[in-house]
Amino acid sequence: METAFEVLNLTKRFGGVTAVDDLSFAVAAGEVFGFLGRNGAGKTTTIKVALDLVKPTGGEVRLFGDDWREPELRRRVGYLPEFPVRYPHLTPRRYLRFAARLFGVSRADAARRADELIAQVELEDAADRRMGGFSKGMLQRVGLAQALVNEPDLLFLDEPTAGLDPLGHHLVKALVRDYAARGKAVVVSSHILAEIEAQCSRVAIIDEGRLVAEGDLAELLRPTNVVEVELEGPAAAAREAFEKIASAVDVAGNRFVLTLLPGKEASDVSKAAAAAACVVTALTTRRQSLEDLFVSVVKRPGEEAPA
Amino acid sequence: MTVWLVAWEYFKRAFASRTLVVFGVVGVLFLIVVGCLFGAQLQSGGRVYGAEEQLGIARAASYHIAVGWGILYAVMLAMGAASRPLDDGRAQFLLSKPVRRSHVLLGQLLGVFLTALAAAAALAALASAVSLLRAHVFPGTLWLAVAVASLSLALAVALVAFFSMFLPRVVAGMLGIIIYLASFPAAIGALRDFMTGGYKEAGLQFPWYVRWGAEVYFAAAPPIAGVQLRAAELLKAQRWDVDGWLTVATAAVYVVLFFVATWALYARRDV
Image (tube, rainbow over all chains, first blue to last red; front, side):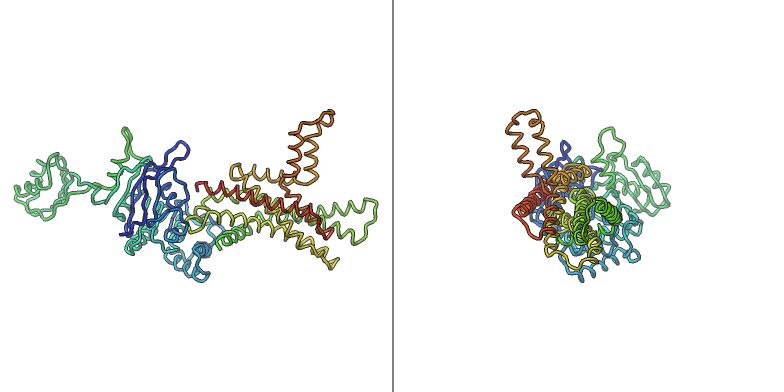
């Protein structure tokens, strides 16, 4: 599968501050990639280097295998910045036409594309109002639309749901899903980890500009010692048996959530249930959440929680 | 194509702002006030001017006001033309599309130039409309004079855009205005005399470096106002001498030099 976006030993210093430090990772076509880190970790700087908005101190970026500095490559790239729209005197329709025209399309095609995008981000009612009075959420929708104006093969979304209402969140989710299904690469930088976990197949977590975790979510999120079990049989006896292998037992009818003691495994749960004359109908080991992983890799000694 | 798109967008943005309206209204008021003052001066000067002569004076005055006003407007716009989009996200938007940095810079500066030119032209048209009612013929060199004067606008834009890349915008604008005022030939001469005058008064032979410093300044000061005055000569004399073309050539060289220097800074700036 084609590599859409590749970062190779990228370093960026602003004066004495190292924003990105020898960073390397790759994103394949058709992949939804979560790019995570604290505020100021270097996520936006990395994306800006990819778009040649920021000059790197060292290393390089490749877009579809080519040198990232070639402007023509950006015909295949879409970018939703954190603060998307700076044309308060324009209406969304005119702004999107302008954005489309920057790709060299004719007036008629630009108008048609603008209309399509306005419908896609559900802004028909505000399409001919000046954006000066728009809310953050409305501007975010327009920003999203301009990022899609060229139907990009690689889409960078920097905090795509910032300021959006729940319907807007749903819109972004559907859009990301649609793009990935069409074999396009999507790089999502966000602090809303539950959304990243739900949408992304792979993630990279950076801290102080350095890569601290990268890989498939299924591999990164380790199994925990929490087991969910459903069974048939005498619940009281089962509970008694489970209390011997678990430090905490939560019961709701015939459904148990067990926090296993060190050294105990899921197989011990089945044995304990059998000993209590119960039949296990479902057994699941809970996995670490992305938030747990994020906290574990970026939290510093003596720190309560990451910023 | 993208240069024109960026410039046109800038032009429309400038005309959508209230600043231009305010600037235009103040310009018209200024034109009226100066017109009255000129009229009063002509009345009280003791000399009787013929109708054609009065018309010529009125034309020259309105020409200078329109161009001078246009230059001030260009300075005001150019303060933020190159550097502000880098900071406020507009350049980020443009450069995330397949648009070259040089096209963004060129488009912004062309936008400022066109806006200032349109503002000056509107003011000049207003002033000319009055004299048109009186005289049916413009000098044949009018359009050439306008073209030459637009070079002084371009020079103002290039200068201020360059300064704004490394100085606070207001300081860059003030520098532009100072250079404009100091580039009137009389001001250049006065500054040269000022540099060497102290030695003259003391009866001393001034050192070669003072003399050459003064001469270099005299020769190399960016001729924003110089171009404007030369263009006015075209209106009056309907012909031009070598000095006129030299001034224009110097201004053109400066426009290119300052644009290249601005580009050198712009190309390296993080957005």
